[in-house]
Length: 510
Image (cartoon, rainbow, N blue to C red; front, side, top):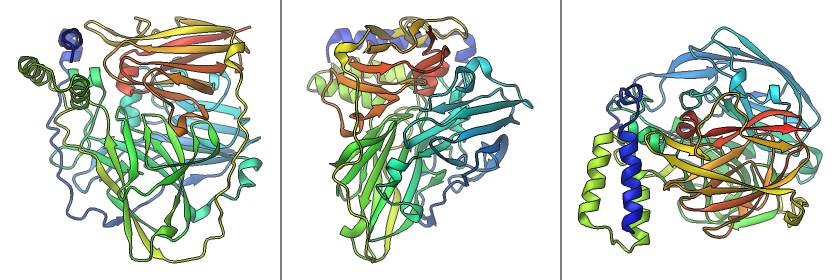
């Protein structure tokens, strides 16, 4: 590791140490958490309720639920469901939704990945107080895909998503249905989230200084709100819709026996063809649509889905030392460890080593009528040479304050970028910090052109709404701003970064 890089990180930490007294008062409670349970993979996986109506209400309420086999935790539910209900709609539908806020904080819903009018997008300025209702009405006019919805109030998105608000919104259309992809019992939506549990088995969310700088990490992976469940499958293809719904954790997902599977879709719907891979890496907010062929197994076999955790202070330090061949001086390592101790960070104390979090049990052998298609759809992207302009977006770390966009923190009504309606632009995200940032742009989908740190993964080759920008990396995306005129946001989807102000407004103008 070069000394200038280390000193930059230390200065960043020193800046965090001088945060305001209000932030310094937020100290973590015991985050040691439970050890792996002896009854792991002993409970069947459950799925959220499904809403197939075009007119309905979503009522956010407080509740207490047992999540990891310990004492009950304080959570938020929508319509009593944890995780939130899965909304399934058809392209061409018009949705009418009443969001009733019955929790103890102001809140608003953002329809992540949908192109909707500005007053329907869940801008923080539209957040409603406890006891109030927000009325949504918008058309579904986009291709089939795995989208989702979650709260978006200023400075409160992290705790509200963490405590349970957020679910899938699945759009279907005739093109996708013609492929006869696995459906019904063979379609499995998984919300994968990392949570922190104390030694009583209660989920906790209590930010310290390191959490605000790095993001809130945990010691347990949950799938659909459950710890280490199992799911029974037969020897046929299954469609897995994966969402990384964590606040901050980036994870590489794979099968425990390293057998391959096929990526067929991402944030913005189907890819051009199936891509055979052995793992897929998702940052918070990203989705992947997979086909897994369980016909390679026989009845009585088991295979697990596992996660390799990729970020956190420990991972960042290891990456730095790897780049330098282990050349960090002992004094620098010790100084870093002392700095982490002073800041009370949970990143190295989380005890979450990743590993298996879901078990598939092959219980039946059956004939499968599904045949893997050679092509899925025709993707037509604009030509980058036709872009009206290139807009540079600097991701920065501000002394004593944290991560920011172009050196500034979010202000509710300040317009940071003005974009002409219909403009085709290249946005160049330049990460000047020493940690990754998953960047999300509202009401548009983009083509990832390239990343300076390497080639694009298969699931990054289709339409996207969220892209990971690694430390020191530049990622260029191409997008056309064809949403209605109005005020929207873009931000880091590390929710603690977003809540700390790593968000900016852009206005679409005529």
